[in-house]
Image 1 (spheres, rainbow, N blue to C red):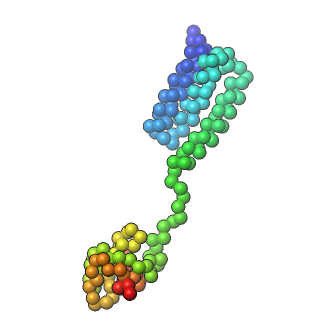
Image 2: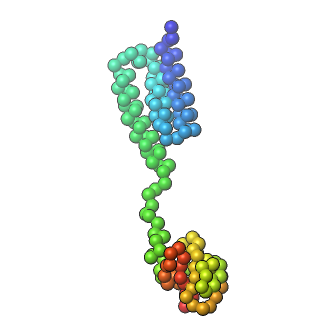
Length: 152
């Protein structure tokens, strides 16, 4: 027959295996059960009569509550913080002063400007070509491209 102290060691080993599984598949919360098994296993290995006592369910419930709280806090710290929705809405770009990345040729949308680190197709209503490196201001948005003019 299996000695109770050996049962405690088996609980610890099983708990460690579950923690290793949790590390390889995070979010599965099997580490929660593994952590409780480790606590229960250590106590059982030290006090073999503990597993049959009235205190074992109390310790299990307490450990579950504590480790659930710790796991939730841990996974919340890994999640990226909530950030406000990006306002790349086209209306918010009107009036922005931006830099031309690729020459803007009138009557085409081949030109490219950089708005907040993102590249947008651009055109101009003037009849002049706007070279790369020039600062321009967004005057309006037409579909998926911007209409710009030289910033003065």
